[in-house]
Image (cartoon, rainbow, N blue to C red; front, side):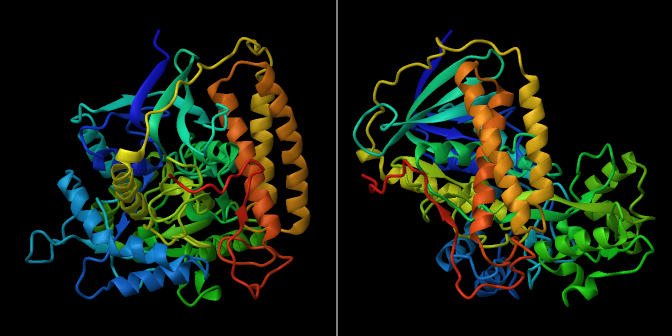
Length: 539
């Protein structure tokens, strides 16, 4: 059975970021797309709200930039924000050319005018959407285009093990030349060699007990890049979506920001509104403010959840704007046209990640990172709603353009040895993996969640160090499995989050600590550097 593959470009991840870079590359290049499950999976599939872009004459690029900077609490890199926002309209044009269909404004005489909604932190209506299932429409349309390209080979049910670098091969230089990848179906570790490698593996919200993310969001790309020698930045900024459906069988189903954007009100169990007590923007405040407010009221009252009410908008409005949410809630006995939705916060988005520039380049030559796995500087201390899909599209195009510009100077990868498992055996102690997985996610939720303290962070650091030691021993002695690889990556990412949170001696954006409740005097990113980091420039 073939276990070695060579392509011009290796893309790990098949959400909006991975698909967009693959489709923006020229057809003469051989491209490998690695999908952890099926091609139409990942966090993009679950995106409900939409994509932010300036398309209305009453809106402006500068307004979108300022809204993003304000939401980012002083930590956005303005050049990254401007680059993303200015390229937003072009990204939407490209999506439409790929067959993505957005809702049209039926009140307009122009049949081509999109219906735009408003979400928290935005000063104008600028969110394009496809009802309340934008991610499903986007993923489906782009996946269909992938299958029309003979130069793109999709490898499903595979997960990255580690990146292959010149340093790992004992060669001079600072280049990434491929990756070892586990075929989940047969248990074999395959070798993928490539001239360029792109990490588009999404975020790491599965590190928390409660999350809106699918099971695949285990921080694989971030952990792989860190082990290979890349810096990571701002890992302490984990966005908790304030409104996920609270129901024992719902598995944290997301209630989109657009429900509040269209007039949804947050209520205490007795029906009283409370957001006015926390922010003058009330329900339209940024996500960190709303999540902390809900968390505060739940703890103050000892309540299991709060409530989000959109029923006053009427059955027809709800059916037209939020059909997916209405259908899902009805399955759990909640008629949102007649009663409020029980909601709780849940881990939703990783604002930090692998340090990149505006071309999506990382610290390793020929290695790129895009989307939620990257730290581009766009989101700062808090991601503004619906900027994430925009980032995937804009940086996907930038990444593809840079790969093309370097074709003449990107050499073919060297000979790479196959994966060696001659010194390991099959495990008979998988209970260790399941126990450690559960322990990790619970102490991250309890100690490194919405509200933090020095004592909680130190407790978390002590526990994650012990898990590191156990997993290193386990990894050295047993054959790799999907569960083991995900746990290994989650422990690495958890450690990065904890260390970043300990370093930040202030409360800013998504990082709130009762020991330092105010903003600090200096505004700095939290950059962590691995021991094997190299500052060699790209060649």
